[in-house]
Length: 213
Image (cartoon, rainbow, N blue to C red; front, side, top):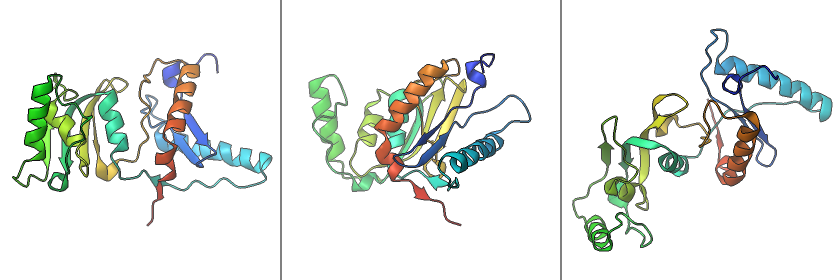
């Protein structure tokens, strides 16, 4: 539709390799639109297409993404982070040698030594900045998210598309983030970016599990 602006479009992807159907979770300005209605319309379109092309039905099964840290780490690497909550640190093992907490070699060794030999039985840590700050280069944040066995419970970050801060909790983390996209990206660029992310993250998509009542 030539007259539709990029930020008014809904992007979706069907990955035949993993049978994953991904729909953009966005806010709509028209009151008659919401993610639920948009999903229902797409299901109807795909239902007709599958019946016509494959002589088969199209049944959508809601799923949850795996409980690993992968998607949290993706958000950490692509957004300005203002808050982190990480648990299961009491079970952590030694930080890998290739993890750099500081550009200063001596400082890096000293911080790692303190972190690896901590005997306080610290089990969780919450780190928060002001609205103007960021945790992306914070040595404690980097040490915590890279600690083997650590579980990222919560992350808050600035989202340019929302023009504000977004908080993701593990208990409700069921979205597949596509970084490097904003509301003004042209469709052809968005399509290629989505394809690239799906290809890179097929392991995550294969580990999705069905929501059970």
